[in-house]
Length: 332
Image (cartoon, rainbow, N blue to C red; front, side, top):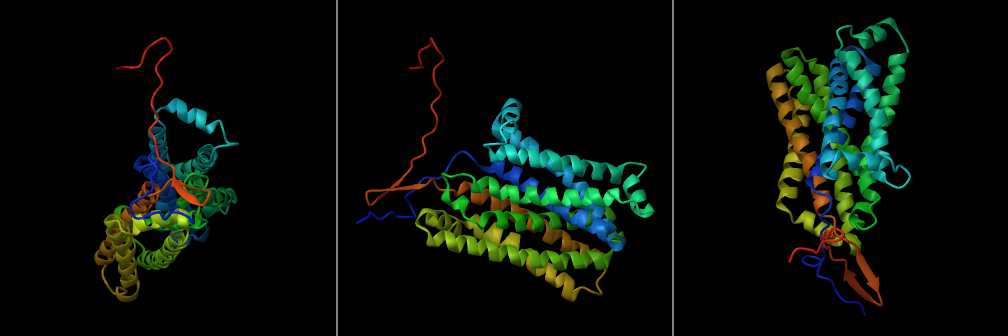
């Protein structure tokens, strides 16, 4: 007969990965999602040129900023260099290599758009094939970056909540949503009344569908986690957290979903200012929800339950006590 754990109060939350790493994962997801959508738009051309310009221009800078947050979480640039030297046994190292290759491709695309000679646009106009090759490679690595943000958590054996098979697809869909939201805000900021309204509204419709998919995957993840003893406490803690209900479900998912579908179905004859205002509000809300989601998934990861002799035990987190230097006694 096993002991019964009070899943509402027992258990221990992990303390190692918190909001700094959540920001790193968030910026990596936004950058990868924005670039992927921008690169896909580059293959369409025509009215999608504005989407391409904004999406590709966001990808590289956001990843650079995110890398600084990873270094801040590791504590020193030297530790970052040691991490990337271990791709065989570290998902952070593998992710650093994936992101590095993606950043190189995104940088080539980025420079080609903002450089005075505008050689990427000229190459597209001349029918050259290499920009398409760059776009396809960039899309592949952008999707690897987005999936990696979930696979990194799935590789953590001590946190069952992160090892659920729905975490990588959840972070992938969320990255696409936040990348698209960033593009909508960026298009309004960059082009103003010159935005191609048909493309902008169609982008919003696509965003609304992605938000619906994200909500379904998120609820499935929480449902499957609630059904498993090792992950039930994480699901309960998140579902009972006010910030999840308000900032993720309401602000991050429900509000942009409603606004984007209103923009598509009810604002066909509205002025550019009204459409852009709705798009920007939806975009900002979606970005807030994406950051909140990653922070909550990290901060509510519960340490594993040990089952032995019919009893369940919780692993208790103990902060590392620094060892005294050789030849010196520890402080009294």
